[in-house]
Length: 312
Image (cartoon, rainbow, N blue to C red; front, side, top):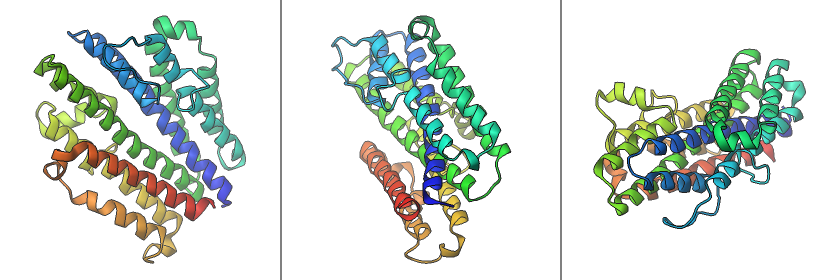
């Protein structure tokens, strides 16, 4: 496969995964804050969304324009990390490899983009946020279904999966960092232990993990089991360790003949991710934010290694 085509497929997967996580984050953060008993939590949710999209974040207590933040996160094509920008980039990457993907997949991505690009901003601002985000999440699932069931499981398919897995890992880590910042702010505001503990529920909802976390631990979410579940549970498909393991498996499928070579991409990526498979929360809890930032930098390093190996 040409390196250019491989790169397009890889980034198509990454932009799709990024879109879904951002849509869910906006939805969960915004609507959970409306149910809160404390008005400061709504302000904190808007600041959290702004931080996730790289929007200028004012200090707590300063004026924040709700409509401006929500539109910038979803429908602002001048914001490179908005939902509309991410789906546009997914479509452009798909267009570049139109002959390597199925008609069904192309039509799903193209229709998805037109739904977002033509969504009325006025409706979104007033009563459409729930409809918009649910449709985005559903469209991402639809596209992933077309990837799963209408493509050959060849090298190109593994590059798409590699992009999906790597982006999923990075988004979960970014969401965890953002929510830890929210929890720290709530602690400073001293607005109640119940609201503080509820943030772990919200974090799990942001990655659709609450039900399975409850079933796995047979207890309500807390700091310990939430962090352990999202980072280290190999059997949960959105945990960071699971996604990195699956990314490593994709690399072995793309270049099976080089997997045992110490200079190979497979070997170098395995060295990065293997330590995380044998960690527990107690080892990292005292410096959790620093650990997550370091983990995120290592995921970015893996992406750079992939680019150097396959796309240059």
